[in-house]
Image (cartoon, rainbow over all chains, first blue to last red; front, side, top):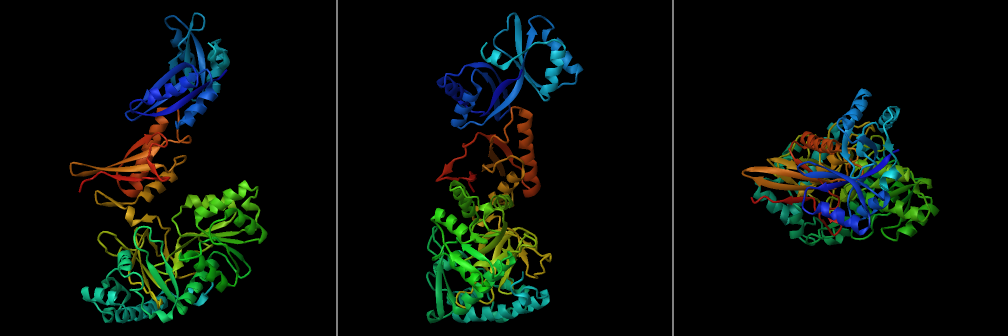
Length: 143
Length: 433
């Protein structure tokens, strides 16, 4: 049920982001979703790509510091209160969300949100108990 | 084991009485025989007769490396050449070589002190010593060699290089002690692994490492990889060679200076004031028994401190801490002396942080501003901003605490710190003073 996300350390200077996209593009890797967290002097780019291992390898070869984290891709009904419903479930179970961002494509009529939890197993259990659909990694990379 | 129980465990008062007697003899001799010392004493308005106590030593002028170069090659020798039986010289990569000489008694004294060092490391006459210090003008190889023979151990005169062969000999001859630079010992372990040999499985029990600065972290690595006790030894050719000071196996905490033969002092490298015991500063040596090449208050440029507390091993010789840097690299930030090696030490103590850093010093208005760039490796990296910021704060806090200066910490991508000839540029000083 887990989805592999890679994260990349970026200094806040011109051209670093473009350098990442150039490397991925040359390796024919497709970016499925992304989020960029930034501070005044550095940023962390988080990516979900169609070939995680290869992406990590080519980025490391080019001198980037790359990490890998497991996240969950959760289906959210595309209507008012859809995301709120899920956050309430998590809140009720005392599961903390570290960060989240939206997936580019829809799953049928539903939106897809990527969640990073401090306790992923607990989050997965809670969501599944409440009948929330969590998308498998291989399905997501191919969407 | 204490090699020379009589002298190594003398009560301090008795030791200091010997020091004073030997100091006065040495001063009188250099004043009479070496024009450089006579002139420098005269200029300072002091004669050997003025030295009535050990404290009076601070009235005597310092000797610097440049003085040795200015008197190249034999100008500071205190005996005629027909009494000199050995000559060594430093590499002189940063200028003219510095040349030192030894009489037969000097060579014997050096062998004795090196034997004391090996013995302090746990060595006995039953040991087989693999000596991988370079033989030649460098004092390391011959210094350790004569000490090993004086101890009565069997010495293998390997010198440096031909590492594959070294591994085979170390295994086939069942060496029990390795003497080398710490970095060469790690290299030996790597080459051995490539040959399918694990140094841990050999008979080695002890490594006596010196001739370059190393850290506690490196000690741990050496002890684990080679399954040995790693002992720190200190020396420099200007003062004698290896065996000026050495750690004991019992404490592995600070190096005993054989101070029946050398007086150590710690000075502030800027004000030249003698610092109280415990404070970090430049190490200065005065030799007490050397004949051919006595040194008077020689500034080593090595940074360390004196540990005055008695040692568990029973030796009464005073200890110095591990050498943590060179005065050449020293920066003065808002009046605080800062050594890049101290920054490295602080970084290495933080879990996961790699010591790849660069210090940038700027002056804004009249204030020095220090920026510390630290490369983010895989161990420190996290996908969460708060974790990286926590590391930045930790580095800031530890540096403030240990060094007393504030730095702006900036995390940077790996390999962004310029490396010239494989060596990183650690300090960029943009101040125009």
